[in-house]
Structure formats: C-alpha cells, structure tokens
Amino acid sequence: MDFCTGVIEALKGHPEAVLIFALASLGVVLFLNSVNPILAVTLPLGSYGLYILRMKSKDAHEERIARIDIERLEATKGTRVRAKAKRALSQRKNGNDG
Amino acid sequence: MMGDYFALALAVLGISSTAFVAISHYRRLIKRRTDQLRAAKVALERHYDAMDMIADDPALPTSALRVLINISDAIHDEKFMTHFFATMRDGGVSKNKQGMPNWAEDMLKLHKSRPDLVEKFDEALSTALIAGVYRWPAPAQAIYEMSTTVASGRRNEAQYVQQLIDVLRPKNGGNPPNSGLPAMC
Image 1 (cartoon, rainbow over the protein chains, first blue to last red):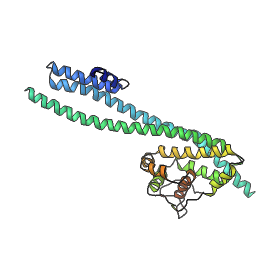
Image 2 (cartoon, each protein chain N blue to C red):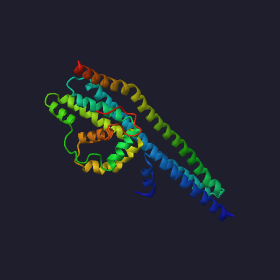
Image 3 (cartoon, each protein chain N blue to C red):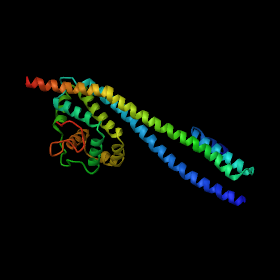
Image 4 (tube, rainbow over the protein chains, first blue to last red):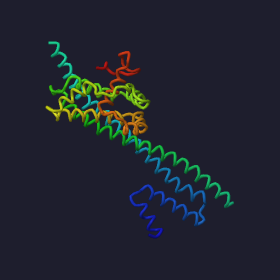
C-alpha cells in the first residue's frame, strides 16, 4: 500500500478528519505559493474553528434533547406507572386493615 | 520579515491547537454524557414497562412491590443516587450482610409457580439500577471506578438492591440528608 492509498483508507468514514486534512493541505498549498503566512495559517484554522464550534453547539443541543426526553418519560409514563404501583400497595394495606 | 511571519504563524498554530484540543475534549465529554442519557432512557422505558406489567399482579409479594416502588422513586433523586454510589464506592454500608434479603427470598419461592412474574421483577430491578447509574453524572462516573469491584465481587443483584435500600434507610430511620424521598420500607 503506497502512502496516498494509506491516507485515503485512513480518512474513509471520518468526515472530520477529511476536513482537517483538506484544510491542512490548503494551508500547505497557500504557504508554498508564498501567500501571506498568517493568512495561510489562519484561513484553514479559522474555518476549522468555526466548524468545531458549530459541532460543539450541536453536541450540547443533543445532550439537552436527551435530558429532556428522559424528563418527559419520567413525567408521563413514570408518573403513571409509579402511581399505579403505589395504588396497588395502598390497596393491599387497606385490604389487610379491612 | 519572512522569519517574523513564520514565527507568528507558528504561535497562532500553537495557540489554536491548544484551544482545539480543549474543545475536542469538551465535545468528547458531552458525547459520552449524551450516550449515557440515551442508555438511561432505554433502561427507564424497560423499567416502566416491566413495572407496569407486574405492579397490580396479586401474586407479587408486598415486600417485593415495596422494594420496586422504593427503587423506582430513588433513581429519580440525583442527591440520593450520588450519595448511594459514593457510599458504595467507599465499600458499602452493610459489608456483613451476605445473605439474601427477605423480599429476594419471597421472589425465589415464587419462582416455581410464577417464573414469568419473577423474570419481569428482575428486569424491572436491573433496568432501574442501570437507569439510576446513567441518569446522573456522578453515579455514571462512579460506576467506572467501581466496575472492577462489581465484576469481581460476590454480591448479586438482590444484595446491591438491598444495599441501596440500606442507604435509603439510614440508622436514624429518616431519609438521607437533602433527600426528598418518602419514608422507606
């Protein structure tokens, strides 16, 4: 397996790694073409920074949704089932009393 | 001039890399927490389904029904679950209790006549424990530290549940500090 095939194989199924690879390549190309070095570094890094911040918000949103899902489950099904079980227990107590 | 630019570019690269590593670490933590919450939801759904099926079954011993209600209430209390897992991590509350609790003996007796009921009860208990672990951040962290002890320990599920009940019912007969739970069995 040559170097290029190895890189392509390693990047398969990892979109974030592909993005980093593409941006890093862009930086190298800019650098080699004597573009302003600050621009050559900050352009790819800035793009990746925006991407990672957006993904961070997405992850935080998914976590919030997962928490809300549980709270909703507890408030609906959980409340109903626990009330049913407590009712059954109190009926047994009343049955024993009577 | 080119050297200055190069040094500045390297500095920007270094600072940015550090920031990205920090953000990536934060993202990994959030993703892990999301996975834990999703696992807790699946476990909680199965716990409620199993509990729903057996709660009003007259064959279910009262002692077992009471345990089920207490566990189901307890797993919703973050302060209590944190307190319980901290206690368990530090060695548990009743090390000498290796025998089977009364409610577990009641269920064992029931196994011959109603294996379906016992199976659902076991499912309700085990899913409640899993939901309780992953529902809150501190127990989810503690279970990593306890995993070796849990795997190599000789306690069975009933004994873990009994430990939970023992923590829930402190020696003074009340509830743990800051717990809004009802009085225990």
